[in-house]
Length: 123
Image (cartoon, rainbow, N blue to C red; front, side, top):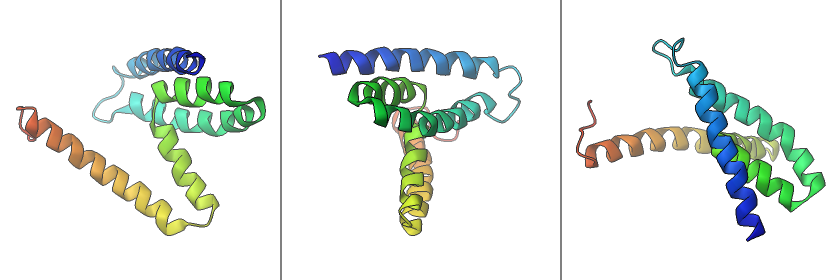
């Protein structure tokens, strides 16, 4: 139960932080989704920064900060970490496959969801 509460508390804070930070850039966004871009990139930076801290401090910190806070803030940070970890292991082809397939499959999945949701993918 403690683990669930740590993840939930961190996730709630992360989600609010994402909403707030992305909203700060909504008016200035123009045609590029700057707010979410900043959230995604800052989340990747924070994941790298906090990873070592969490490893040294134990599982509770990892659950609260990496899984909870950054999971609520942006799961893109985990995608960035997984791809970085593959590169760190000299598994360049797998890192490239992960990056390309995740982006392409993600966009196609959104298209399929919109189409099945009754709004049509072209809207």
